[in-house]
Image 1 (spheres, helix red, strand yellow):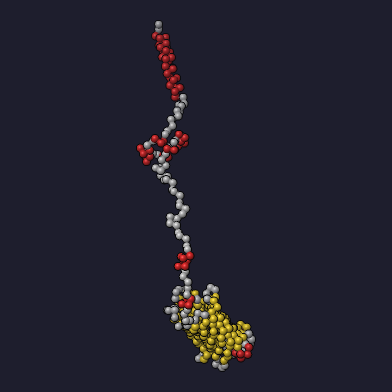
Image 2 (cartoon, rainbow, N blue to C red):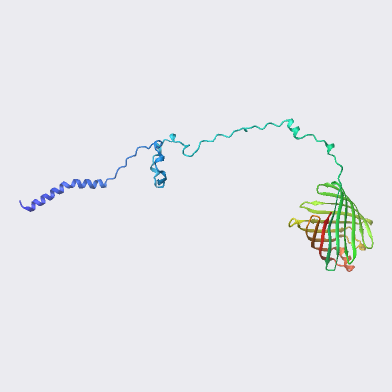
Length: 330
């Protein structure tokens, strides 16, 4: 036999023997591996303290593939897991019940009052307030002015004295004095009745007075008085003041005062209707409640026939004044 046919026969035999092994190897690589189901895990018998949870990467764990159906939650110790034991219900009754109030307790707390032993003699008090004592300087001259009031009596019944006036050029242009009986009709208001006497350089008049004074809402000090004079003349005056506390001692006091007459009196320089309006603003500093100097400004204006009468006499119908003075009470 020749050498060439022998070599070909040997090569064919080797290929035939190695084909099954090569096919089995490639078939094994191509085949998809099958997944076997793990047996259920009993978490109640696991020692979690030895599992090293501090170093475990829980974020990388696939919890969706964990079989929680086989976990026995009835054997888990929830108290040891930090949930705590359930709190007992709150008691419906106090631990020490409050005893009921008896008639003897009420009698001991509110003994009968002996009104006879509480009677005291009526106390008499008094006060004098000089609300304005000032020097003024206006466009057409300078002078002095004052306004004062005082009372003596008790909390209900009082005798009131009021006075105001003005001087200019060394002579008294106007001055009056009122003596009034006042009775308190509420904690904030008094009703006044009495007489008023006008003092003038040439003549004087007496008036019957009826009015009211007190503290209006929002702490406006208000005084309104009607007068009936000789010859049937009727007049009235209204004054409103307010105290605005900038500090405990620095106080700004606006003032508005108006006077009226029922009929013309050329001899007195008064016309019917609104006669005069005065508006002022004073800033005072209370060194004490009894003594307070102030500065301010005041504007006066005459209206109607009253202004005409004064213009005819060579006087002005309006004037603005700078004032400086003091407020005192005793």
